[in-house]
Image (cartoon, rainbow, N blue to C red):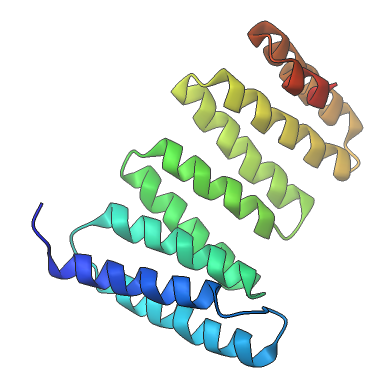
Amino acid sequence: RTATRDDGFFVGAVGQIEAANQAGDPNDEKVREKALERLHEAVRLLGLIESDEQERASGLAKVGNGFGMFGRRDLARDHLDRSAALYLRLGLKREAISVLIDRQGQADAPIDFVAINDSVRAMAVELGDRRLEASAMIQVGTGYFNLGEFTKAAATLEQALSIALALGDMRKAAAAY
């Protein structure tokens, strides 16, 4: 493929993200301030990409993870959600799942954690990926447990255990048990 103007924007955005991620100690106020400036510049560059939405989705995920690393969970969630939605619109469910798995680390509350993992579970079912389905169900069950919804937790974990045993995946079975 020939290089386009969008490629330059993407490369520039990724450069800003990498510089932010390598800026140093995220607890150092000056480091965090400079890193956040770089991440905002990356967002600006990503907004200039017109034709390659997959690159834009990838960049949004990278920016989201960068914001999360520097304590801006609100911006992390926003960019990760936008990335996952764009991947889904493009029909790229595996990429969306990867972003949602990153997004669960930015969850505000256990109910948010459950909803994210239930979305991952639903996509795994659509993809026919039983291992991923079992993993997501283990996460959903854990979320229900943390919410104090023990009946839902037990039912969900029993389903995950059943899938894991059917697959012969003893690690997942042990996690579900």
